[in-house]
Length: 191
Image (cartoon, helix red, strand yellow):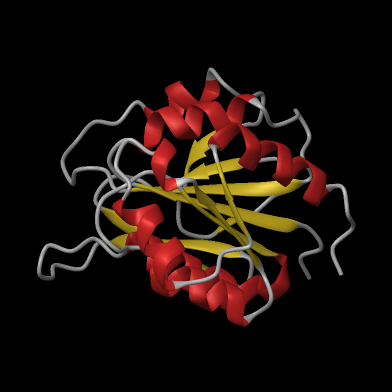
């Protein structure tokens, strides 16, 4: 049984500067696992792992199926994929061909809510579209925590604004404040 928080961070266009800001204010041993779901172009060669590693001492790795999620580790969604958490293990699949709408954040956040329930923390950063709304609603349904980048501080505000205008997130903050609130929250033992 998992006894630590799992922090899922969803972002799209313009999310990288916000993510870098957030990560650099986290301690070396935050006591939680981190999973980053980013809308990366299907055939792109991403350097996201190297970029994030410059801002944290946590081990950063591209997720693979059957990776058992571990505290004080950071997992990244590979390009062109979608991912779920099932029985504390990450499951990576090819992204389903659809109308072109990327729902990777909703898919992961929803599975996270079902799998770890009140130990889920969902964070939405800069991005376009509405991906993340269903996912944060699932997290809230299971009594998890939702944090959203203040839309005015986002390079692209439609993803954060969708959450703020159509839901009731627990926190609406700039990235540095998200990290600071997260650190305070993670000091409280889950349960």
